[in-house]
Amino acid sequence: MIDDVRAAADAAVARLAEVAVLAEAQALETELLGKKGPFAEFKTRLGGLATVDEKKAVGQAVNEATQRVAAAVQARVAELKRAERAVQLEAERIDLTEVLSRPSRGHAHIVTQAWQRLEDVFVGLGFQVAEGPEVETDWYNFEALNMPPDHPARSMHDTFYVDHGTPGSTVLRTHTSPVQIRVMQRVAPPIYMIMPGRVFRNETTDATHLAVFHQIEGLVIDRGITLADLAGTIESFTKAFFGEGFSSRLRPSYFPFTEPSAEFDIRTPKGDWLELGGCGMVPPTVLRAGGLDPEEWSGFAFGFGIDRMAKERHAVGDVREMYTNDIRFVEQF
Ligand code: PHE
Image 1 (cartoon, rainbow, N blue to C red):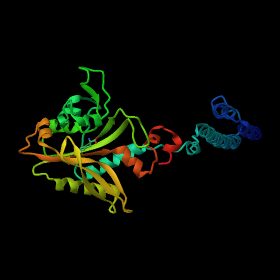
Image 2: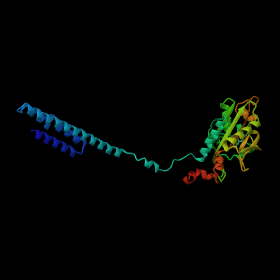
Image 3: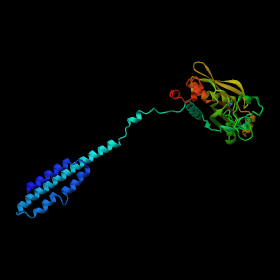
């Protein structure tokens, strides 16, 4: 009988080795070691043996065989679990090298980059940022800025009119200066504000002119502000934005909504002059239009083109190229 027991154990171990699926190995465990298995059967037969010694010897053989089979089952189950896990992992694997072969990441448009850098520099100088509407009333865009209906300066602003309200009363803003008035009406001085945004001129486009472009307006209103504060602010901005090697100058000019008025230029380290924008002191009429008392408050304003800055910075030959959305152009920056 001892031989039978050992032979049964050998057979069991051999069958286990052939099992290739985890569920089958688990089923085999019940079949071999369960109540109806061969070793349970051998145990029931122990009672029928003649001598105590015989019972002892066979009993020991049955125990040994059971242990051997149990160990083999455990090892086989563990092995198959590992194999199944490996198959699962392989199936769920994410190929990260795919990401590397995709097109490279995009970036902000050069005009957006210039806009953001301008905001950063002015915020660093203590300014806050405000925005106004792109569709404006004639009053904010012209009249409040000292350009009554027949003012000759209006002809410099080739205006797009919007079909809304009384004919001629609604425009696409031709500059960001109307936001000056809105800020004065809304914010109690002192005001140190920049106002970037999109503006529109009914013009034929060429290498240096667009019909839709961007400006950034600056407005300072405080007590005792003078032209020296304006010149100093432009100079600080120039150095902060372009670098220490750059400087600025004001050139007398004319704008209806500043008095005195100037244009400001930037001097590059090579000695070239770059025309940047307009500026001047805010006159009493404009302060009053903004609801401020000219006896108490004084200030200055400036404005310049953002697209121009991007064009100069990246030496773009033709401003129109910036809006063709040609990926070969955009990718260069
Ligand atoms: N709004 C003027 C323009 O578009 C620029 C400017 C702004 C001039 C503020 C003076 C003061 O040309």
